[in-house]
Length: 399
Image (cartoon, rainbow, N blue to C red; front, side, top):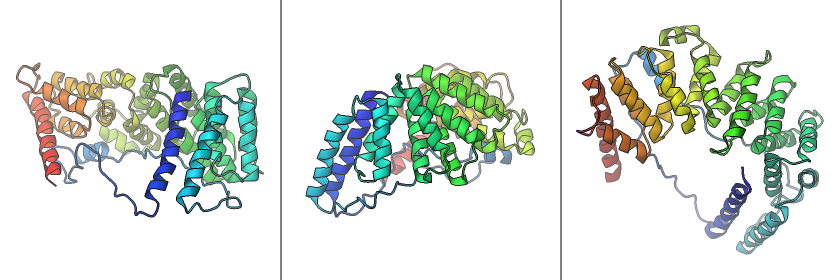
């Protein structure tokens, strides 16, 4: 989270308020579907066993970020029911944003506490929150003291629960080793109310880092991996940690997810018979991997194994959900090099393609001068996935 990213985020919030001004009094805008491929029919593919269908067509975990209950600003909140009032709020927020940039972590922490206690600045509160999270993210000489104070407040039963949830959100938004460490230790050791514990775990599941900040992502992945190895790490914690690990997508974290998905058995039948919730959580989390650095690790897990191998199915599941040309190319390469009939898997996995680069990779794979497939049936499945996409796309255009 760089300074420019925070400013951009705050700008989006300001534009949202402007939108309220422009559209005040109008009905809701209808939702628009941007997926490149319409949803597939739910009818069973008879070329896949029931076990395979249950496994590869599971719904992926929710990508919605955690939202704590709003803090109570009702005593100071006034309804802005005119264009003039909304415009004044927007103008004030621009000034407040400029004032917060560059302030010390200690100062921002005090302002956040004052705003929570006074509850008289509802339109400034989110700007203070975001500025504090950015300052913690960047780190400085004051960070350790502030994080320690936040840790004490988060684990204080006497603190309002909504405030504790808001604190957890700031710690996750900061996404630094010290702030994420607080969330991990709190969820592992503290006797938290059920709703608060659920929110802390949700924050862990949605930890985010810049795609190019591999050093930070690697450090945070290490914290979550270590947390999973603690004796007090139950299935709920592992489920949240696995999702956070997947979203960062570092190779060492993805390797752990593959190992955990295969821990209950090497084949689909063994996996299902074991009924291991942690293994299912790891398998489901793999659908959240998006970082291209994970592709080589996933591709390697598909080599030299049978089509009913959990290693192959877990890795293929992850690659098919990435929406990334390199991931799609890896699936095609695997399909071209295997001596097993995996046409049904290729058709299923390539049927999830939703980005232009992946469609180009599929088109190139079935071109007349493309490298040969060991089994022609596998190449035919790749060609069929492209034909189905084109048919669905044309059908969608005609509506």
